[in-house]
Image (cartoon, rainbow, N blue to C red; front, side):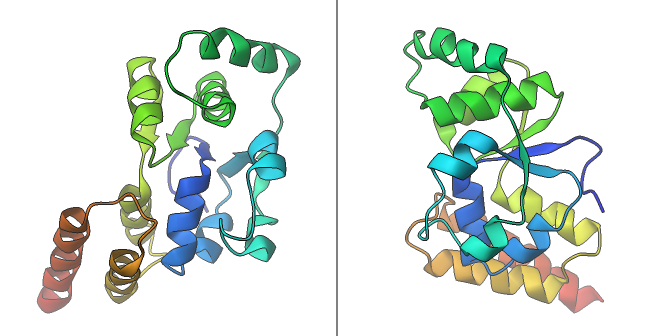
Length: 171
């Protein structure tokens, strides 16, 4: 099952959020979600999330040309890491979507024509595709509210919790 028509290249902070929300296992089962080989091999650690689940991600390998482009883009002094840059390049070159919670990477990607989604949008899409119930969304958002490592503002989490509580009330 896909949650979008395009492939999704995910960043580690999305993996951590979805792991802490106890829904990473649902995300990794999607047919169109990938992690770059560089990120998977170099950035993933136990604190990122459940390694056994993360191992199930499909990987997408960077080409030699893409690896050389990392140097060119990093010379722009944009504050992005080599992992941020490779995620951007892979998403761009595959006409994909970049999943990230990193503000600098989001702004850079969008200004260079790459669509970006964040954790809460992923959760909403999973609900639209009947992969998560309203109750599961509320629980996931409540877990994220308790998580000190998430970059999602509490106001956004509260808004989503209230939205799905209203959906429950009208069902």
